[in-house]
Length: 157
Length: 65
Image (cartoon, rainbow over all chains, first blue to last red; front, side, top):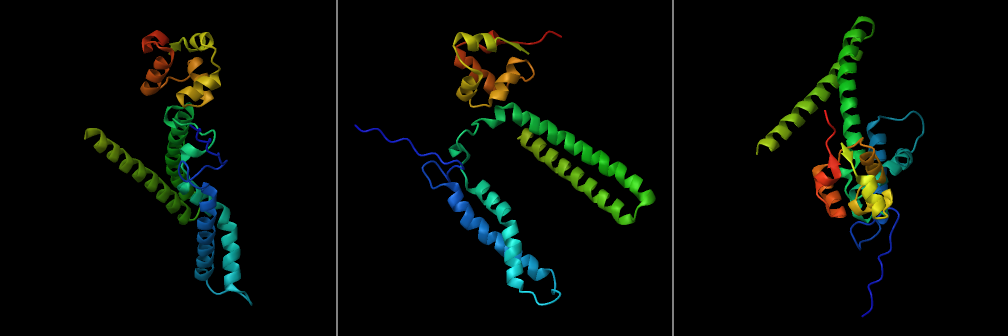
């Protein structure tokens, strides 16, 4: 009985075990999306000064956005288990703990910074600065409250 | 938490990387557990115990207060 040949590994993984390389799907998805966004940005940014081809400008903006769009498409397409060297149980690894603790620190820094910043900037800077910091504080606090309530509800089920 | 992980690992001739691969975690995780800087999750503790054929309490000992 002949043995099944080992599956070829791709550096950026596959869409699923035995599937096509994820990068081959990410580029055809990410590139048109980036160009569409670039074109939309050009269209909504108002009339240009001087003779400008809007489509060319939109495509140029899209090409600048393309790496990010392709990366996002890849992240959505790839099956993590097919990436060579990827740690299977990241939830049990210390890096996951470091991430959680760092996110915790960042949240508290944002809450304190935006809160104190609102008070301090109200004394010397235009009101827009204070209002912006208030908005940051409210969004951060609301996100925390909603997340806490959801987890509490799930924990009580 | 104190543990016998380095001793057990050396007995079985396992490198930190090899043990990490067996458990599906990063090598840094094994390093941190052995140094007592990181306590494994309960599922990981059970996995470690099963890997060495021992009970969890045979490997890990709570640090006395």
